Image 1: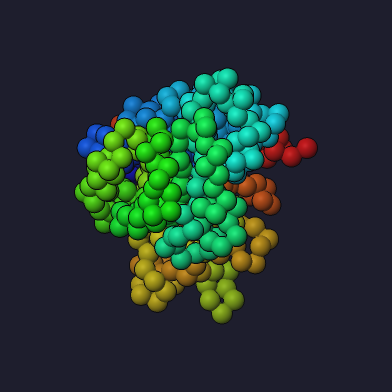
Image 2: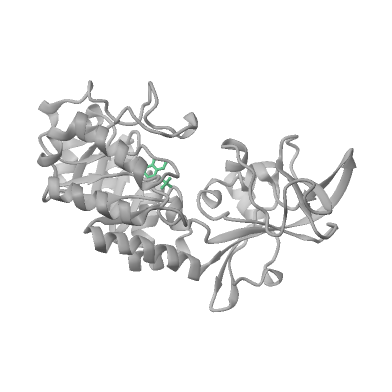
Length: 375
Ligand SMILES: Cc1ncc(COP(=O)(O)O)c(C=O)c1O
């Protein structure tokens, strides 16, 4: 249990035991369904912990050259690459590190087929099931006109020579039943190609480490798939499920202003340091708080940038807030850390690790980090 009084503000702090807990669940799935689980770096790439992630998972999936290099340097197991398109000037380096690469179109496959085969990297093609039960369009790769994956109509059987895998990604924070429904559509539309493959990647969006996730059903679905398609390896590449509820963003109140309501200005920016709260949008949980008006003292929690909408939401607390009060935003490790910006130059939260009952400061961001991102 983290002692938040020992954490400087602002700081993202990951509790190692909670990460281990998630990794154990993911590893159980690998073992009981004879599948591979790899970490999607786009969602979780706190690289100090990648050696630990590598103790449990089979590797990482990268969506860019930068993530590929990180996987290679910090984890070094299987490296899968999947991006909407690859640059000519990067493909050789990508393939020098990758074990698997997924192409998003047959034109990219043709462009890079020779070099992929020469480098002996296992190639796959991303398919678009044209079905998903994701409610938010922003996060739905299977919506109409999606650029992500080849639809059945565009699928070219005659170009499959050299292709060893299929990849789909059509879930977002979903349970195993949603995977079952997507898989049924995949089998209906692309089933004839599956037995020709060495592997199939079920993508991410499996909320496996969430308390109500049906792990047994996932294991059952994969095992049934194996029975139907013997010899086709199944790969899952969750990001969020790796870092899910492994830590917090610790911030503190700088000032309280009043404009009909009390507004606490914090030493972080929601826009810069918790961007998904505005993008999705969602109201982040704050430790010890209630909904507006439920507890005695109510506040709007707001960030320290110029953006009028730099607001986390309205909350209530048992004790009145004052300058220096700590505000702890829950579950702020996955996606958050990888999406931060230096907008307004607001002090970037440090990154820390809570391990063996102690706080370890991993990284601080000073003026140089801000300066060196610009020029
Ligand atoms: C292709 C692909 N794989 C894996 C993931 C990871 O998804 P999640 O973090 O929701 O598990 C994503 C997320 O967008 C993705 O696009």
